[in-house]
Length: 468
Image 1: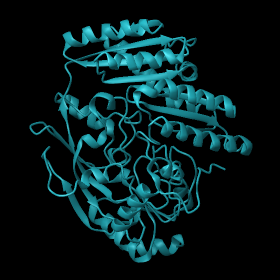
Image 2: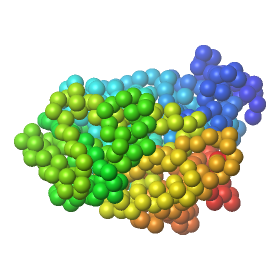
Image 3: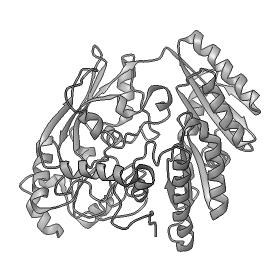
Image 4: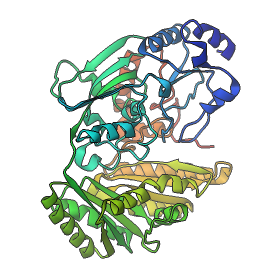
């Protein structure tokens, strides 16, 4: 539908200052942090759930695609308007952030920045564990719909473990509530967990109730360097086998280390083939013993250096270096393809070997980092989308990465979602029947297919990602 006609249809529903129809504005919403550009026909910034419901009803009537969008930090194309239509900019939605200390809850609107939830919870001695690297800019609505979690998933679990209630506008324009304020709730189907991680294909979240936990008393962090990547992998598995459950275990390969040092010098060992970051939290006496055990295990696995942070400033500097990985890699080339294939922890050394073999096979700049404690690795390919020949090699390499993960008992995505970039490989992991059951759920909830179409499920006949 042409922009002018769509604009006329929407004007009675939304304030004119909340409707963006100029070409320059629409181009600002044509991309996210992943790959590809798609121009929407209209952008709407709703203020409340009633406005969203009215837009969704209009979209069903005229079969207009609707794409919910938070801060556009998606690395899998989750918010891309691949079929045009309307982008719902939820970042401008009315903001609510209430900390209920008595019930250990946070009640939030989808437009709240995730980092603000961390800050407000910690001010009263509470803790919201999910901590994606983008938490300082990403919205909680986007985090919920992608089930983004971050480093602390190893000990504390993923985002879906902390969402106990939702208010949602359905794909047909209804408004429902799922779950509630109680941790225990077994009334009917668990629609809350179905919606979390659904990538905006089953509903638009307008409010969420999040479970909080008491803030750990203390924490200790170490950084260990290795001359061999496989040694770092075995150090990770041996720490876990020793009965220690860190709150986070991160891995960076040599390319990552050098990228960070070139971007923001952080004192990382640039000659190391890999480093791991291990953080322990809990009771002060217990973590002192456990961090010492971790140090011993690292040296047993041929670590060349182990540095335990002695102050909060030293700890913050270690994590700052890890947080700088993604922006540092972005500086290495004009195009960054970010993946998050995940394998069982015991298969991390094999997966690292497979990734390096893929890098050499296709002669690509492939950089690896990730949440190694739960097997969630982030292979990033730095390339140039204008180089058609190299992009063909990138396409083949992406397929090989997913194949390696599935063969090792893993999954296509640990936290980035499926979006547009991984949809062709869904059958590889789930089989035709598994994908068909998901499609049945989608069709039942969204009979007109208007909510975030073109995501999660491959286009007919599509068997691989197309980046050219």
